[in-house]
Image 1 (cartoon, helix red, strand yellow):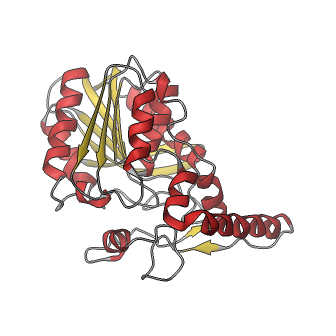
Image 2 (cartoon, rainbow, N blue to C red; image 1 turned 90 degrees about the vertical axis):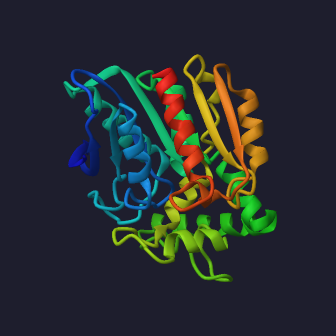
Image 3 (cartoon, one colour; image 1 turned 90 degrees about the horizontal axis):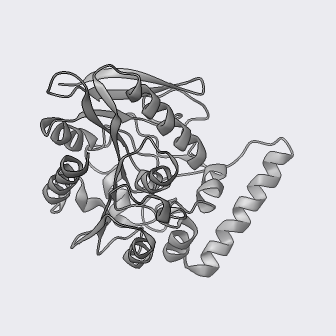
Length: 294
């Protein structure tokens, strides 16, 4: 029910899965991508298959430098570059004769949920937005994870790394997750279990550059959330989110225009993925949102 495809973005080859729509002629489509450092093999097939069964063509991509996509250094994660990858994927969908270019929805989760909010506001080709446990304000999330003094320490480390790279020295790297007490980008127990636990994806890399952390720290995905309206916006949040304090979501949602809906599920950040208690509900609700508005 799906085929391996390649999407070209600024010379990079993005590995993707394409799920053709079940009907004939031009079909509405959904573009999907995963969270920070994550790859499509980490649970996205379950979402994409559900959307396909509901009548949508679906494209899932790995960002440049991640997963099966090309690009170096491996593990590089820069929001603006990932935005461009999503824009290239939108163009890829637009050019397909079996896709209705006027009915393309954008689905993102975690870091890419933030991208969905950002591009949903700025790219008119996006007609419907579903943001699952989305990043809202990366600096605020890093402060919540590390404390204010810890965050200032992180900024000092990033400044030193920039100075080293400016001198022509190699930049530093940091694990995405690590055992408790060791430095990492996502220093929570549930992050470690999701990424490094049983069933770890072979194409996932547990490393990113300090430069990537610096670019992420500057990123405010919901800064233009008011501009998504009048396109429909569904945000699916987790009440016990270890990475994105739910109050951030409430504050951003209050700024969004209609039509909009916020669902706060009684679960943690990673419990929306396959095997989690909220998975079936978020899939059903996202599917219904696309079916109603796309």
